[in-house]
Image (cartoon, rainbow, N blue to C red; front, side):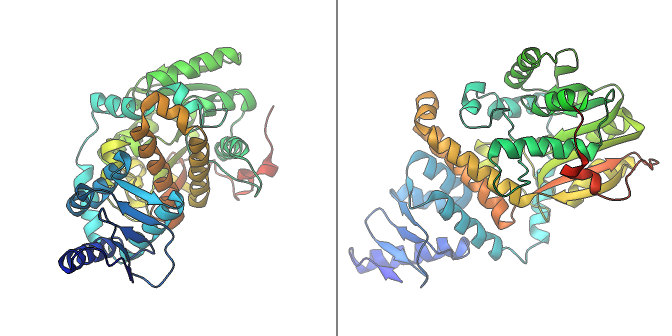
Length: 411
């Protein structure tokens, strides 16, 4: 333990106990803590990966009251400063907390159940989407890849760039769905339209894609016109609960996290109604290895209404409607790398973002992207792709060979 001896004994004694408690709550990570009066504490013999400075007493009180929200808001506002690499710091903290909670199951599960009772109504869903996705296309264009893909990439080679990995993800999804020219695809939660346009351009299918983000739909429609695909892709600005029509394939990439557990069965009923008897569906979603309520700071400031489900919770989509799970893949390491690359891109344009939204917004988003990468790196978060089919369908390959690059692509 290293302690700066400035200050009275009483101050040092109280401060020491406070730091011990904070670090114990965080699983005793290898970090140093510096307080507003200059006292610095290091409670392990290991070299700290970074130093967390609490620049005001208020930051300490906020950490005591609610560690997640207190740290997130304190860091965003500059009351907490990290000296050293932010991603390394967040990786260390997240891994320590994950290890500390490794043997807990029932209490987090109860928390998840209580959180799931909150239903995302149509109006609340619109508000939640507007809060995050309608920040402006110009903002996301600064740091996403050229296709504006804001979901987990798929690094099929060790040297793949982010843009290459995002295209590989689109193909990975299309191969799993075994798309053929002339088929009809329904997509729920289409983002800026990258997958819908890719399916139409390279696999010859007709796509109807739904999303309730006005900014994203406007971008996707213009992109379809620019690519000459507006006759094969129709972008609908509407909630997933209003999806209608029949399809050969149903796909949802990165939407389930925003649906809310209480509405999972509703989504399953829509899928069952739309998907043809020999059709195939795929849901790609952030998840967890066991039920747990979402991080309080993330829900308050980044993704209101969000819920990252466990696999057992995801079954609420499929089981009530007898939809048959065919294949499950976990791409967790791919998302850790994706978020780390997003953070690099974001840091490179931070000055431009600060001009648009201010310094506090920049700090908040840096923490969100670093925390997301750390969540996947530590195993706190998972990334599931679930392939499924209607109850009586036997239209399922005998092996997984069709899922990989050798299977080719229609042009």
